[in-house]
Length: 114
Length: 110
Image (tube, rainbow over all chains, first blue to last red):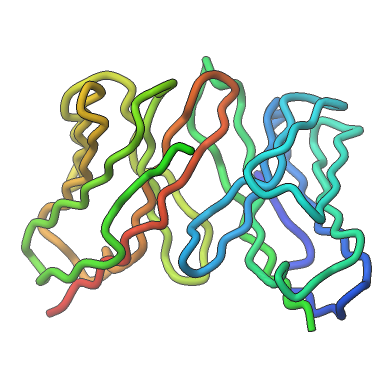
């Protein structure tokens, strides 16, 4: 019972490179979310998805791209990484807002952009 | 915006009671969560309030007043392991999106 997993757990990259963070959940939850967490800002929503092939912007979407071709996967891509994108990234999933309100979080990916 | 305010940090003594407050904008409110997050780990669910009143779950209780845009998390019989960040998060409108406060860093001292 893997639940929700993220890979890699740690990543160091350079400014301008493309980076993809992976998120996989085994519960067949409809909703998935990407957050970043920075000191002084708490958790901020980057993108979310209500179902396969449906995605929408959150609070801080600039510089990020997402896709959701399969229900279980929700990759987050930084097309040209910047130092300001150094952060801890959390993926989360939710069954359905009306059925169960709790979001389950993955373990996080710590990304450093040099 | 939907400002969610909570104190940045609090300190309490082992065995004591601590109350962490959270205020939020009421327009579009659709539920409030409390999460606990230990350093270097993912947030874990503590409570969910959608109706007014107090929800008790062991040593932890959460209160909500929708008309006042106010919630608190009450931790009783504090233990050292309760040292963590406590995150208040609100669901606005439909769709399950959570807006988080900055979190309250709680330090429990012996």
